[in-house]
Length: 326
Image (cartoon, rainbow, N blue to C red; front, top):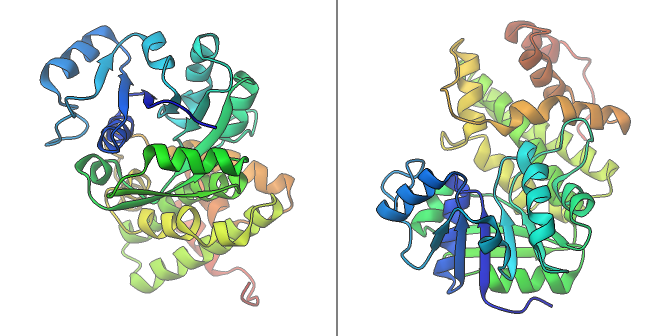
C-alpha cells in the first residue's frame, strides 16, 4: 500500500529531528521541515539542533523551510505538539497527494473538540491515511540510535505493517497494531499520570507511593481505554503500560520533570513543554462523558487549574473509601 522511499517530517523540535535521524538510519530519503527560514539555514549549516545537544543531524537529511518540498514525500510524520497538529495538517492538506499516509507523532487530545490525533488528521485531510506513532521512547535515545521499541497504529493492518517496514531499523523497532484508540489513549493518559508521579517524587513521598501511583494510574488508563473500545493487549503493551512506566521514572520525561518541580513548589523550567498540562482537563472531560472514574488524573487537573493545593489533593486521594482491586 505504501510505495516509494521518501519520508517527510513536519516539525524540527527534538522529537521531529530524532525521527528524521531514525528514518535516515532506516535507509530512507528524508526531508525535515523546519519552521522559520533562519532556523532552517542555521540547522542546515551546523547539522545541529540546540534541543538535542551532542547529536549530529545525518548529512543525508534534507533540511528545508519549504513545506511543499516535505509534502511531496511518500509518507508524512507530523511531529508538532498535539495542540498544534491541526494547524500543521491544515497547511499540509492542499499540498499532499491523495492517500498519503500521515502519521501523528504527538500524544494528546485536542482541546475543545476532544478529538484524538488521528481524528484531527482525518477531519482536516480526509484524503489522507491517518496513523499514530507512540512510545515508549525519548527523543535523545532515538536520535543517538540507541535501541528503542515503539508502537505504530493504523486501522488498516496492511498500512500499519507497511509503515513499520518503512521506518524500522536494527535500533528503531516499531510494533504495529490496528488498535488506534488504545494507542492514543495510552499516549495521552500517561502524560497526565507522569505529572502525578513527578509530584510524588517532588514531595518526597517515597518509592512505595510512587509504585502505588503508577499502578493505580494504569488502572485508570485501562478503564478509560476499555470504555472507548481499546483492546487490553494494547493497553498492557508498549504504548500503554510500557510508556507509562518509562514516563513515570525518568527525568528525560518532560511531564515527570514538570511534576517534580510542582511537588517541590518550584516553577517548571521555561521552554519545556509538558503535554500533560494541556491534556489533563480534556482527559477528565472525556472520562466524565464515559462515566469513568479517574481520581488521580482528576487530582492532577485540579492542581494545574489551581482549584486545590497539592497537599489537599493528596489528602483527598488518601481518604477515598477503601475498595477492591480492579
